[in-house]
Image (cartoon, rainbow, N blue to C red; front, side):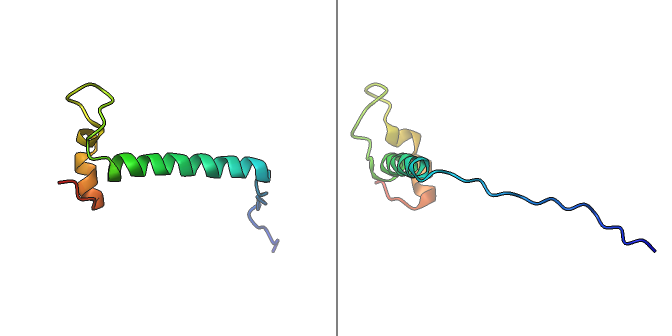
Amino acid sequence: MSNLSAPTSVSTPIVVPVSRAVMWLVGTAIVAFALYYFIGVDQGAYSIFGKDMHIHEFVHDARHFLGFPCH
């Protein structure tokens, strides 16, 4: 009997320089804080699309789904 086995592949890790990793982490944190503000903190006081359309109205149902009170 021959000892046949399936070919195996060896994965190599991706090496990212520290400066690039810091850039990605800072960028991700900025986006996360912006999303947190617009979904969780903004109460519709700032209009960016005109007088009747507020960020609050776009994310109203998502706020309640995520547990943020808004009324």
